[in-house]
Image (tube, rainbow, N blue to C red):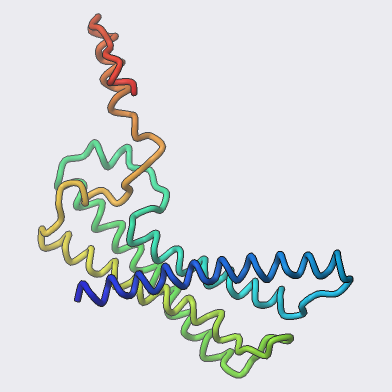
Length: 193
């Protein structure tokens, strides 16, 4: 199973790189053609928009797996293990609900727009909404897996907080420094670094 998951995320990363590279070539090539030759590629704008949408959704899937989304964890980090697990379960349920809504809506729009095509390329508009379906399924499975692990007690202590990096990551060092100042003690340099 782990081989399939690793392969899926490797495919997502390769697709992201290909989308970004193609967008750069399309947009830069179109700019050069417009300024140098007073012409341009008609498909450039449509394809760039489609590639941007695909890279946004696929990038969100990868960011979800690597826990790179922004969040505020100052309250959750002060809770005990049970409090962290309770917050994790509540947030996973909320994200599952939102992901489910996105998945259902994207599926419905994909089915409705199967016969609708983009004006220049003639590509089906269902691709726009299909990226939402891929996102919903991928993120939904990740959320269900994490929720199962949280409810069965298979999470490590550091996994109980969803956000791995935050702007207030130095709060513990600042709290130690202020406690040392209040107690009249000497503030160590490594506490502030």
